[in-house]
Image 1 (cartoon, helix red, strand yellow):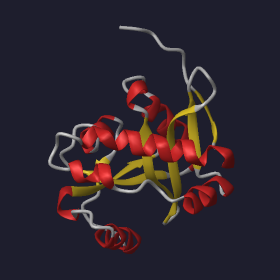
Image 2: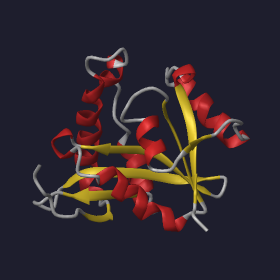
Image 3: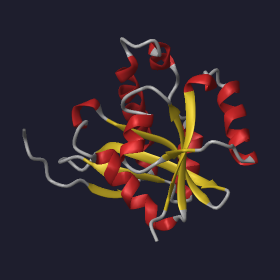
Image 4: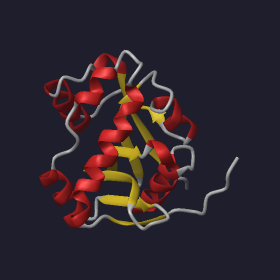
Amino acid sequence: MSVHPPARLRPARLDEIARVREIERLSARRFLGTDLAALVEDEPTDADTLAARIATGGLTVAEGEDGRPVAFLMARPVEGCGYIEQLDVLPTHAGRRLGAALISALEPAWPALLLSTFRDVPWNAPYYARLGFRVVETLTPALEVIRAEHLARGLDESRRVFMRKDKMP
């Protein structure tokens, strides 16, 4: 097992939008060979949305050894909580706890974190459960709106779950 230095986390820059989209595209390749392989063909988050998140401090990257982003977390406020819209790590950097580091860096800013993910994909809901997220049993109006957005994009919401992690007292 190789040891990797801790990643440097920082706000994303506008000149990194193409790189963030590349990370999202390459990360989606993990779905190849699963019954969710069609997700590989999805377009990554559009540049305007990424620019908007950068402007509000809602896009954080983890740098690789060369200073280029190798992972990112995109978040926005939802009902006073931090909603994780996207978390992706380059496959070449998987297993280095970059996702957990990005989530840990986001936690202090919010009373709770929220996200929506696939229920049975090992690197989705089971991963987040190991990080302390719990399934949301009853959706709030804002989460219902997000679910409707997912349905409009063609996501199978019967396979997805919303999760929440409250700040430790």
